[in-house]
Length: 113
Image (cartoon, rainbow, N blue to C red):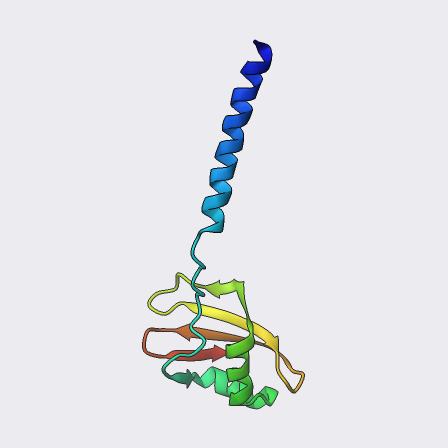
């Protein structure tokens, strides 16, 4: 009698765990928060000044935008009306950059680099 009382809860627990795993594996892939191919890219005055001082080209900024990793600790996805994303990475020329983008529906603005 005691053995039966232990087996049933274990089977139920195993069933719940199996259902959880199956649902987890079948979840759709999460869409990336940052659009890496925006319709237009604009540079703020502050970003242009920083790019000139640090000798960073527009091509390097675009490279970070395409290949960089999103730093969610420095990003503000709830910023209204345009959320900001901090992307960081290393360019082909070896520079380590962190670029701050503000992404609206129609355009993306480079805020700082």
